[in-house]
Length: 113
Image (cartoon, rainbow, N blue to C red; front, side):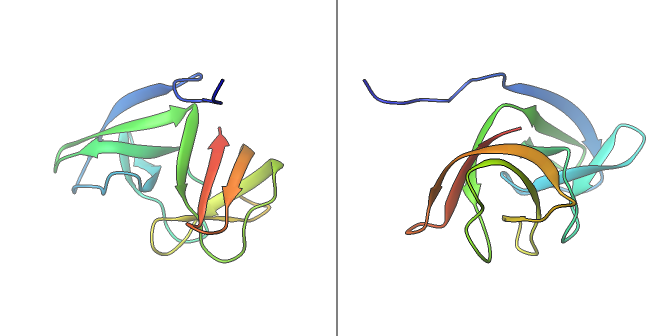
């Protein structure tokens, strides 16, 4: 049997946004009911699933696989922040996550938040 975490506790919300946000980019709430790209070194509230110039669908919990920057995050309980290029990196002030897997070859991290 192959391991799969897809769909676990996935929750998505639709927010307003003032500009299109790249799919897969970490986001934060910037004003009432409005999200924007997370700034470098910020904890994030979710990951953008899709967006246009007015609305963004944001995953706010569940399983995520995305690229990391700098050093590989440690497995298990951890904290991640947004990096300058929309990837994530380990930082003790970040969003609490459970890191399930790290692939050093393609610089991806799989986590639950």
